[in-house]
Image (cartoon, rainbow, N blue to C red):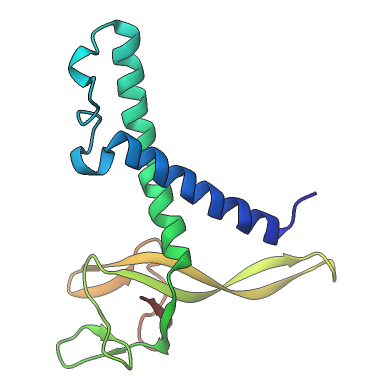
Length: 156
């Protein structure tokens, strides 16, 4: 049976495999498969289907690779955010958040404790983005979380 360490190592391998597929396909340069040297010779219904499906798969793999790469980036700062003079939320080292900004924040969620056979509150680092509505900033997917005083971490 696998454990987190094994899963971590396999995810690192997967990231490398995805990077290879994206590089070979030249997907990032063209955002499709038109960079393939035989692209103009793809004509049959089967080949065109494969081309469309591969494009769809590469789009998803690109997201997965980006998420895996994000988790490997070193942490530059962990601090609480506050509202600065411009009305934006900012960290102690000057990293600020505005609409469209990515944010990694610490939230509390009730999780099951298998050892004690009970539920407990656990801190979980969570990645999302910041948006605004009616002049108020909020975290996408977590509009109930107050941003002022929220613990965040910033990666390099």
